[in-house]
Image (tube, rainbow, N blue to C red):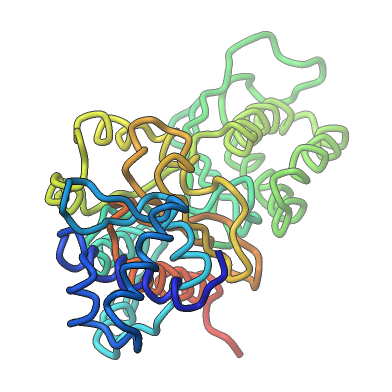
Length: 354
């Protein structure tokens, strides 16, 4: 449907219904919106929109409400991402100012996104698989146990505790097997950083294999233990982390859902949230809006998900953030907030610019 006037009528119906949660009649449209046509023309346009499945009449003699198809058309053809207000921009800027590490900025980000949109907000931590290694730290904790700290270019920090096995030593191993030699540990740390810093996850395993071929005998047990844990941390199915805020916002939207329990249960499943965040390809602006059945999850059949990617480089998304709310949401405002927060977070990851 490409009739500009009918698009205006649909836009007015969506806007009014989002604001009032009441079915919208032709009289309300005439009184509240300057559509420039007679009430009879508006009624005809509403009848056409209903015939095409964009709106429906929930009760006899009642006004109309948008359908999932109507919301989809509104988002694709009508909704425009409006700029945030000065107070909203200031709130985001103040949020990120003074954040010292990724953990802190993600937790701040998810809270402000929930506050700006009035929806449930989700922020995915940058994936270890999509980031580059900035530094690898090895610290002895006990004679046979060490701490490996992985620091990525996005500021994500991952810690793994490694215990050396007390099996038979390799022939020619000069060190006491199963006991960490501080000198060998320091040499190995320097060697690993020289070889791995700046590499993506896919490039780490080949580099480690090359190091293993040239490793001195007193580093072999250490290198083998570190290699196993490092590859495990960077494997494709490694556990990702997410932060969630605003569950109470979703609870307040109960009238928009037939039942709330299955929706809340689905949101507790991290796998579901990760799939929602990084589902179908984003549009040209880097955003994605999925409505109702487009979420491919029965529990989210009455919900909409608005997401955007973020990362330290232009077009280089290493994670996603977004909101989950009822299909009856203010799409332009929500899309503006999600896009703005993603951009602020990307600038934080990029660091100071010269």
